[in-house]
View 1 (cartoon, rainbow, N blue to C red):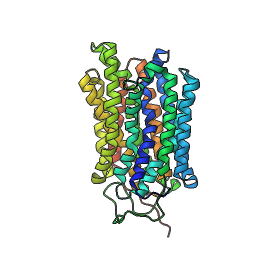
View 2: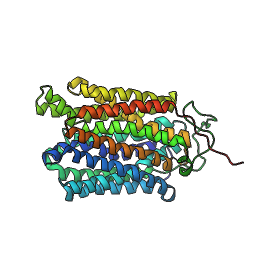
View 3: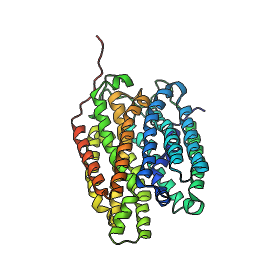
View 4: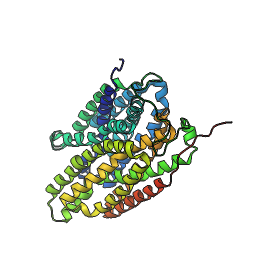
Length: 417
C-alpha cells in the first residue's frame, strides 16, 4: 500500500504505541499479586525484566530493520507481545516464574521489536518537525497506560469481574490486533524524499548537533557524546520508572499513614497513576518534543532533568496528601514523558537520522539499565519500609544528569584525508 499522506504514519505510530504502553500498566496488576503472596520486590522484578528485554531487543530491531523493513519488524513485535499476554492468561495466572517469562521476557521482547519502528519511520517522513513528530509518535505509549489501567480497573473492571487470567488474555488479543493494524503504515518514504517546500538546514539549531555526516553505530560508540547521553538517560529513566513501579504502593502507605482508609487510599493512588501520571506522561512527550524544536535539545534536557530531580525528591512528602499527590504525579509524569521525545531527537541531531533505528537502540539501553536499577531499588527499599530514600536517590541522580548535560559538547565526525 502506497502512503499518499504522511500523517497516516502518525496514526499508525499512535496505534502501535498505545498497545506498547501496556508495560506501564503493570502497576494495576501488582495489588492482586501482592494479595496472592508476592513480595513488592517480586512485582518489580517482572516489571524490570520487561524493561530490560524491551531495551536490549531494540538494538536487535534496529539492526534487522534495514533488512526486513519497518513494516515486518513492527508486525513481528505485535505478534510477540500479544502472544506473551495470551500465554500469561492461559498458563500464568499468579505464578511468578510464568509471568516473569510471559510478561517480562516475551512481552518485553515484543515491545522492543516494535517500539523503534514508528520513531525511525516518523523521522524520515517529518524531517521538518522531528521533535514534535517523535513526541506524537511515542505519546500513545504514555496514554496507553491510562487506557489499560482503566480497562482493567474502574472503567472495565476486568480484574474484579473476570480475574487476572482473562484480563491478560483479552489484553493480548487487543495488543496484537492494534499493532498489526498500525504496522500497515510503517513504511519509509522513497530515498531522497523531502516534504514540499522543506530545505534541510545547513547548520545545527544550537543544540547538540552535527552537520559532519551520519554516524553508524560503530562510529557512534567511539564518541564520548554517546556515553554522556547514555548516562543522562539512565539517570532520568531510573527516577521515572521507579516512580511508575511505586506509584500505587507508596502513596497507599503514605495516605493510610495520614489517616485515610485503605479503600479510599487505593482509589486515590490508582487515580494518581492511571489519570494524572499517565496523561501527563503522554502530554509531556508531545510538549517536550515541540519545546525542543524551539529551545534546542540540550537546553530542554537540562531543564527537564533539573526540575525532575526537584519533583522526585519532594514527592516523598507530597504523596500523603491527595491534592499534592496528584500534582506530584502530574509533574513527574510530564517530565518523564519528555525523555521519549528528547532522547531520540538528540540522538538524531548528534549522530544523524540515517541510522537512527540502530543508534537509538544503543542509546535506549540506558532505559533498560534504569529499568533494572530504579524499580528494583524502589521495591527493596519499600520492603524495608524506606520508600523516601528511593525517591531521594533518584532525585539526586536527575540533578546530576542536568549538570552532565550542561558539559556535553557537539560531536564531530572524523574525515579521512
